[in-house]
Image (cartoon, rainbow, N blue to C red; front, side, top):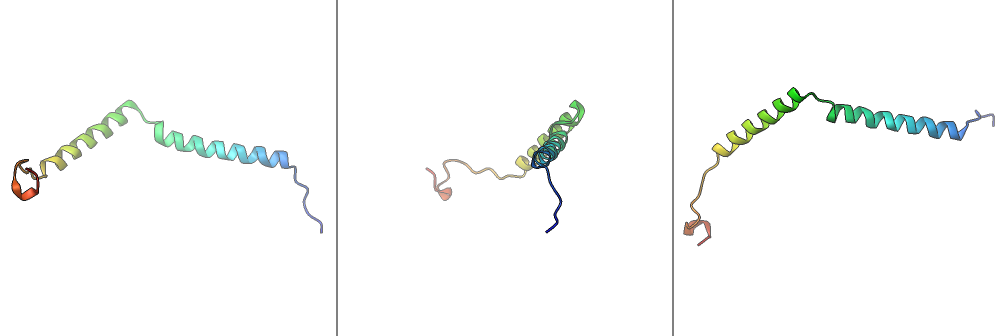
Length: 69
């Protein structure tokens, strides 16, 4: 029964540091972008949305076949 002596306070602090570092890494990925990168992403999303909307078929609102009217 010879085990290593562990200081629980130090273990808790090390665990807290590790969790903070993981959160910081996630924040760097999520929020650490330049204005140009954000603009590029927004532009690409707008372009994709417009392409999607152009491919949709439009139905008249008073058409009896679609159940409205």
